[in-house]
Length: 547
Image (tube, rainbow, N blue to C red; front, side, top):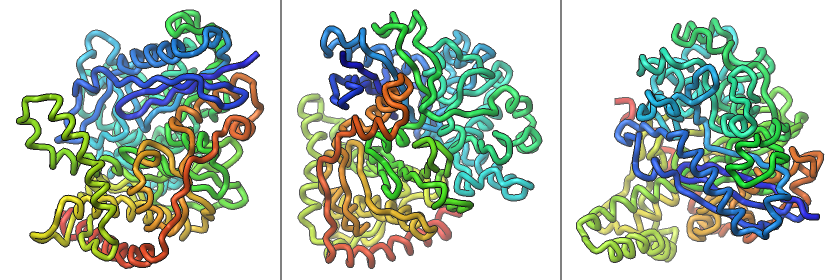
């Protein structure tokens, strides 16, 4: 009898569920649903980099995606689902009451953005992040040491502190804080109590400065020195964390009914999307996995012997067991990748808002990126004279700085849209090279690069440019929903189908769809252009962005 598992991947705009044969890795069915309130533009203010998501969106798409995927599956599938696991964006925390209920699910906070999940891309806490960095670097323990030495406004404590300072009503009602990837498994297993729900090693280690070396989270003295509004939170959070091969429990009867499953389904500890995506792409030591979408997240795993006491500066952390239990997980990434192209598209399509014919407007809009890509690909690298930086949403790594702004130079009256687009694509590739170089410079061996995500599968021009800039082949994972697929692998482990995730990878892995080989001549030209990218970045960061 076949056994099936469900992997759920919560992205920035939508969630997807995949039903997978736990023995073969065959995808039986999948479903994707956009977040209703988010799609309607609720609770966000891009002008101040505020991006909030309502927990009701997460609940609604959970039910819709699972039921939709099961409806497409053979009749006996639901009865033979044995495990379920979640990945989410992060850091995406929310304040809760004593029961672990997100405040936005309470009537009095239903419309309050500060009571909602603070999405990873929310940069309202830039000031708080700087305060955390300043205190870390003068404290007796540098709690940011295993998070690249620079704490980001995208992360747990900066966001929590910003919300507490900004909203007295939330401050009075809040009891604890929970990450999105921790809340969903807790909800489904009926244990949302802040002190007892199981917390993700991945989320806590990479974003909340948790480390066994100093007994868990930063000390209460550190937090209250940062701001007295944080008093008591450490005691109402957690000291232990769990890797994603840990079984939390089973679906409650209520959630089994709501999802159309049985209460025999095992639920695993959650993690962040890129970490599960790397597992779905069959990450191993020496493989550099790029989750390429609106932003990028770069994941590696390393043996204890390779890392020893090594600390890599300016990345998003190195955490024991955050990707594969028994190995050190390394994370980096860019705050904008596909979002850079989306911005340029929005600039070009501005006049389309005045076209009343919806069908015509959408047809033209859909042509912009494909046509730009086709025309930009025809331009020889030697004629790529425009240089840009990729910091349109700040810089995640190397060396986080959410205040920096993007720049573009070399424009003249002959600069065409395809030339500008090519420069933007090259900028995102140069940002990628900066990350790769940081790992290599610090003694981390990179034997292969693996691309996953929508851009990796759909954008040959972008991927070839990336291979040429890096001077390394890039393999594209076959799994179309690699993050959800990685979640399915962990679901198979927590259900007892496999003893460890490496075994699930071997049995369920789908291999690779394509390999992009670098052009050596282009690579030599790009090495020179990369120096211009570095010079432009240094100039704008020191001479422009400081003002």
